[in-house]
Figure 1: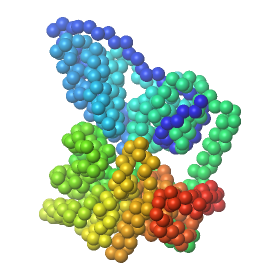
Figure 2: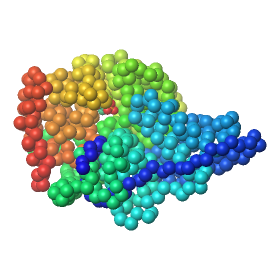
Figure 3: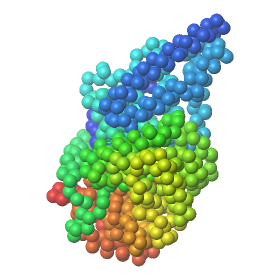
Figure 4: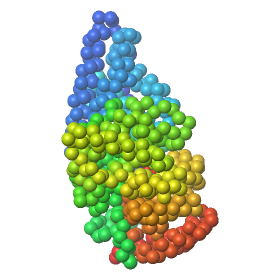
Amino acid sequence: MTKKGIAASPGIAIGKAYVLKKEEFSILEYKIGKEEIDDEIKRFREAVRQAKYELERIKKKAKEKIGEKEAYIFQAHLYILEDPLLIDDTEKRIKKEKLNAEASLEKTLQLLPTKFASVQAEIIRERFRDIEDVGRRIMRNLLNKPTFTLSHLKEKAIIIASDLAPSDTISMEKRKILGFATNIGGRTSHTAIIARSLEIPAVVGLRNITERAKVGSLIILDGNRGRVIIDPSSKQLANYRKVREEFSHYKEKLITLKSLPPQTLDGREIELAVNIAGPEEINLALKDGAEGVGLYRTEYLYMNRSVLPGEEEQLNAYKNIARRMLPYSVIIRTIDLGGDKFLSHFPVPQQMNPFMGWRAIRLCLEKVDIFKEQLRAILRATNFGKVKIMYPMISGAEEIKKANKILSEVKRELKEKEIPFVQDVEVGIMVEVPSAAVTADILAKEVDFFSIGTNDLIQYSLAVDRVNEKVAYLYQPLHPTVLRLIDNVIKCAHRQGIWVGACGEMASDPLFALILLGLGIDELSVAPTSLLEIKKVIRGVNWEETQKISADLLKMTTSSQTKRYVQTKLSKKVKYILMDRSL
Ligand code: PEP
Ligand code: MG
């Protein structure tokens, strides 16, 4: 039986299923006397204290295993231990309803889903799961139950669960796990993030995989395509064994490209950088030979926590990345909050059209204190590496001028305090709003570089919500409008003598990357996992040929025409280059 889900972490795993049943607790509910209230609260606080101790240990382990950033998830769990939604609510219940601690906590946990039910954003629902995870930890302590472990597992297995909490994932020993398959979760769920960092194949969002797979069933998990096959036929098994072998050879072969330049056969060399959301992706980027960070999505530093990161914390994060990337540069994008990325503790009001609402630079130009704090940290980080600044979601020259004015103020203030920074730090913008793409000739005079954000540029220019699967068929990177806008941006930048990159997902797709190359792009900033693949296709083509294909595409009138042309002219070639072992 084949089940389709969301590909969360690449790779193929074949092995026996180990199905984790959701832990069920039997909880007694009883009334306590007024005189017992203090003792009950004390017992509850002791369980919280124990949870704190456990989480500190898990955090330490996480730091060693997967680095600072993921370890931060557990710092978030530690913050939750102080969250009124969980702690105050339970204590109030003990006091007011005179209920025992377990029952009070259980009631609080039961009410959580209703508090979060109407929230659409995945990031918020993830937070709910984090609170629930912490709640269950406290409950285990109240009931004196042992914590979750895989120590009894004798052989490596594919872990099947309804949902894996990040603390469970990190506590598992990598040598016992072949892969993860879960009923729920998205690509941005913490479990998916951790699986990718640990390089363990994972498929999430499989709905009812825990009901279908039995402990000991043979499983094929395809983290590349988001499939899980339960009790495969011998033919499927043979096929996948071959695919698994090919995939591992392919990965081994790709790594040989690490120190070769991203240069076409006829000598056009571009910059090949990576997009990152935090320091944990730097390891993979460096391992694969990235030449810089083309987009650092700093908003992730602000997520999953109950307070905004201060200047010093930001400085540490930026400084660390800038240092590690030397001699290459790091483009730090100022926070792009709003849209589908927002904070549970920061009041972004409900909006009818969040992607077109109070977001990114709009929010920063109004919340000047937050913006200045970030700019201060970025400027101070310029002392430690090659740092550049990039503003997101710019729609016109006024916004650049306003942002630059604030930047000048921050520079002046730092100078007054004799705090050092690089005075002539490069400043660029994301070109992701159609008005910016159309007026690129004007905007090019205001900045040092452009980076085309195709994810948003496509959604805005074609009026297609990028997260709505119902209109996904209209999300067409090869639509004549998109190609013309990109072409205009590149031409305007070059006429003005500035460089232009692309950091949207188009750059991470081998076919589209070649079209961007043909249109004259100077830099591609890609997902770290795509870096070597993109380098391989660049090294397998002639620039002249891609220029011709891109010029032909610009003359076409419909998406079906452009798609067909790319299929016949480029698809086969790209497949051939990717599979060719000699390149
Ligand atoms: C984009 O819009 O293409 C982009 C790279 O930014 P984000 O995906 O963070 O909106
Ligand atoms: Mg964007």
